[in-house]
Image: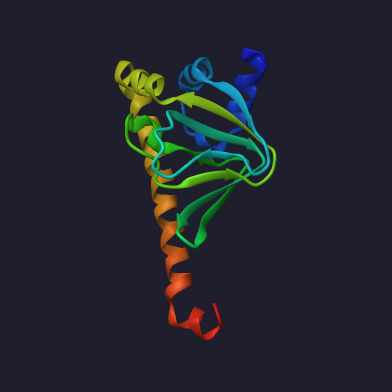
Length: 159
């Protein structure tokens, strides 16, 4: 993918809707195109994956593995984000991510993102503000799954 094509793809992604044009160009300079095959585990819970992804096409399951079962917390699709903890450098992933179908994404090295945040505080604020939104969405998704699994109504319904 050429730089111009990457820039066009990135400009259409909802994650950067409120970014300044120069911030989108900065992200473009860090971006690389990646693909995941159906059923490919992108990362396991606890892994130190150093990439943040913007999903362009496909579907990815965020899961928690338990001894006898894998719980799906959320299904991500084109326009969603994946791997927010890459920017924390050295911290393990909170979920397992698995491609449910062939998935295309833009990948960003966490170290490069962190460096860009330090060098340009306005970019850093925009990125961290959006990342906080992603974290909030993941917490809400987890909360809803827990409510679904353990609420009295769900138990009466046979789940």
